[in-house]
Image 1 (cartoon, rainbow, N blue to C red):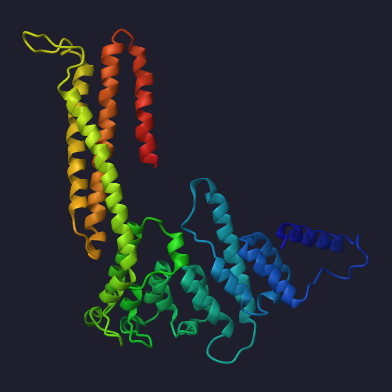
Image 2 (cartoon, rainbow, N blue to C red; image 1 turned 135 degrees about the horizontal axis):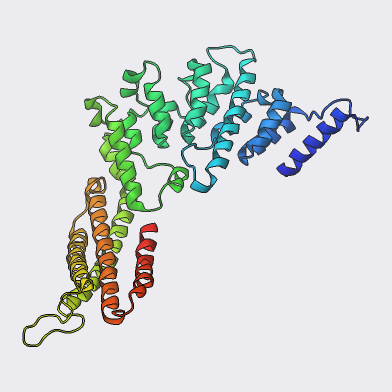
Length: 405
């Protein structure tokens, strides 16, 4: 399992053989088939595709000894869309090496003789690739062996059904457009008469949910979006069609997501309560500031002593914006707390309200910081203009921190 040492020893023995320093070696090292397959699989699972590439180049026969190597590629193929800013170069290199390993392994499998319409070594890997959203692996197999598309697992599920169950969007879109099977997919059913919309209503496997957002409300929204996407691909009569248990797709969705909906409702109400408290606090502060004039006022004319100062104008405008934005935030989150939730509300209505509430809360907090900075400058820094820079810098920190989070 020490892959770094394996890579070093492999290079050392090959170098020794090439330079003739090791007379006892009559040729490069050749481990037995089982060991060789395990070495390649371990390298692929550990995402060390550079070592896997060296191994499949040096020992190509291990690539096609069984379907284990191709299966491990399907299970661990890197997602090309999940590049992080500072590691994108490394990720792109990993993607390139993984693709080269995939091509070499498929080339070796194609050299083997087989009976039937397609090589059996392609069946299990293409099904696993559909579960892992590894569209590159699915594409490579189907380009070489399009007859593998009817492959099914032990439960009788095909590629597109597994892609729907595991939320493999890229594989679903690719398979749905591949060939001329659209009408077949629109009426496809399993042994329990579940069509693809029934399958889309099932709760995603734990392994899939762990890779997505941890927020239950957003998980429910994503599942609703997935159901709406699949709904476009079935015949209208299949939207309300029952399975052998007399369940429609919507009934299955509501049953499977019952606990997730409770968790999502609890999360939204807790967040709305917390944000309402913050909005009420900002409303209180800004209202108090609105009736308290910085620098005092003329007791006869009731005009501010600093009425011609630009900082006072900035304070008045920003404080007004903060006041009305915080009141809007308070009303939005109070409406969220007072609402009765239905599962469909998590698709558009509730996320939209949450977004509006958080947006106005951020606006109110930012405007409050501007107003506070204007008062500081107006009262304490009247004769010191250079103080504006540190005040503005300190005011930006909390806003930038919140936006980043």
